[in-house]
Image (cartoon, rainbow, N blue to C red; front, side, top):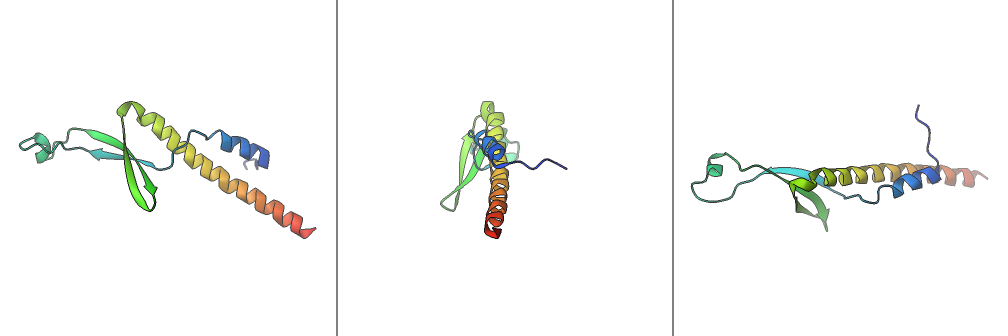
Length: 103
């Protein structure tokens, strides 16, 4: 059974997620739109990567150059860790609140 993390340790781990990005990476096969191009018959030019995220209730997409895909994936993973740690911290805070209330 994994060790329960204390408040201080959770906060330290949350701070380690500072380079996070919220969203997900989307892979899209691209077409150029030129008449007679092979991509019009289904032979795509290649896969493009985009960071997809919500802003004011609308989905936004930002192109990710191939050289940055791994870095952006790590930042997206960092946000997921941040979120999970935040939930654990809230659970610790709730437990401490219940303990104080009992006194």
